[in-house]
Figure 1 (cartoon, rainbow, N blue to C red):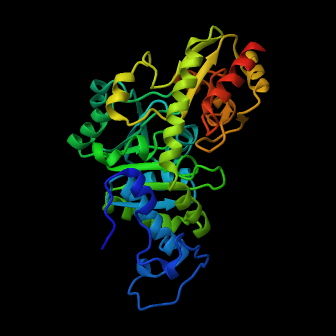
Figure 2 (tube, helix red, strand yellow):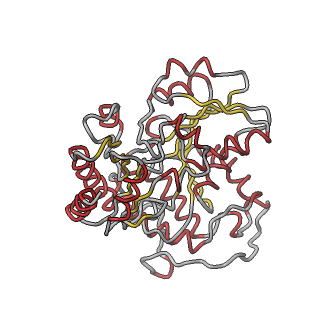
Figure 3 (cartoon, rainbow, N blue to C red):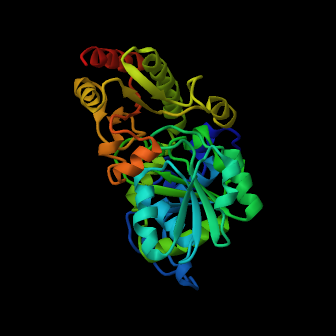
Length: 386
């Protein structure tokens, strides 16, 4: 009898697992083989080969990813940017046009504005909070609309219901980077999105020891992306598949701790006299708090804030912290803190950063699995020393 699961935590553990278990192994073995014996496959796409992303490790991970977002299919890639770039290049052709949210991860922004022009792909930025303005940006060659569930690094929450509806009405492909929310807090397919993208390096894996990406959504679109991934070669190694697969089994318990701790830390910072602003959708004064409450099962483990006094004070604060590691990336068991202007958004021209509201003094914080009380105490001491 097949296993029946209705709850996300059960799916994270059991979905996609080999049945029957391979040689009785409770944990899926690592199939560290680049090539497989020919078994009569009739086409290149059905041959067994690691670059085709169809080893047992790939297949198990694909099934788990699709199950936890309640989607039709999934595909893993060699990095989050491989997921983003391969998806967009598979769906867009020279002469096409895409609408994109005006505050995006720096790597995505660089892809769209440094690489797409030479490919003759047009990009227009839209305010994710102003759906009535989007129609004016649509052209006859518009093919897709791209947003982030919670924007990096300002923690904006665009009008996601309007995005999915807008795309559906105009036959555009709706694409969302769901990295910050994770499937625990938001499942795009359930809200009408065609494709969900992840840097699996972050929450899905959760242990800062692998780089990977994921594409989840409609099977026909995932298949198109898979064909291009095979040609470009950005496939994920089986051992990395194993690490993401293993990490996902604890995603639920990790994410719920990070949701709770981030909210407590955000509330502490919000009340501190030396803190100018705090960006976290779980705070009641966040401009789209009510929207986040309606859409999400949790507000995530990411927040950003600014300390009064500018860059010099921000850097002094970072230097005084004992627990968070000053490093890029996010979503791991250890807390990470950084100024996006020097890391995640360093490749973005300063004028574009300022236009998007990303100041040089903005601090981004990824809450780990440490006790919230210890992190708050550490923050309090560092702020007192500024």
